[in-house]
Length: 322
Image (tube, rainbow, N blue to C red; front, side, top):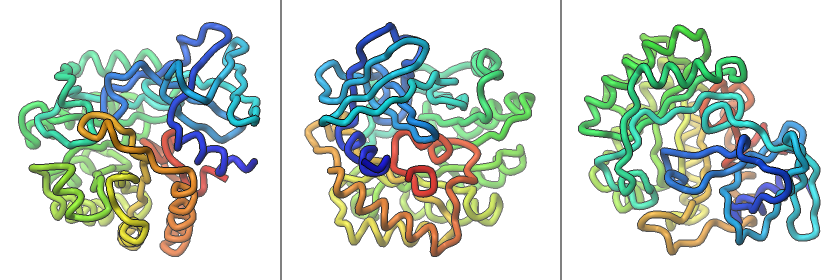
């Protein structure tokens, strides 16, 4: 089975149970996004390919850890020999950090507002990166919103100022103000990700009350002018009620603007806990659309230095998955 076909099947399930030798050092835990507050996840790699699967003892996917990271993945009579990847912070090869683990907004697909997490201090964040600097190639920053969008931005910029000492590429994904691209660019940030989340304005308004869809598009276009084509990214969740035609139109619009879409399969949590994950067939269909749109726009995911497209664990990523 081709890796792309297998990964689509794995992402449609989204979970795995891990047996065999102790694997605690390979478990990544999230404090942002739909996976926040869960029991953790593992990154399974086969050669240069990888997939992230949340831990669930009832999952139909089994990963047997044979020790020192060597592992076998079992699913539907398929066995893949590979390895568990040790995370830097949150994901392999990167320090991917959540600054503020709470949010004043209430996006329906996100668990963070319910967790009421804390904000990390600048000193704490620097120490965390210091602890993994020998096994990472980049730093990625995301954050909730503790009090206001403007105040959160100011705090994240202070974090970035202190992280430039490591001399590593830095990517940032926060909810932006009109000044965000200029301010991040001035600090030497190399990539940004501002998430439109939903394929249509109507779905965005339903899923992200209080946030501004048009502002996100304006900031994305500003960012391309500053950071360059292929250095700007945007999450779009598959499974919020959009049609394939609506998702294709969104993908094509993003790539035509020089923005790389990050197509994220819905993780049914928070207010969407009863929803279904997108099927493997749909993920593969949209992967082909995504692949074609990137090619037409001349965008190459393999050039990504930071964040989700560089990791490629949670999504099917043209150019990185084959």
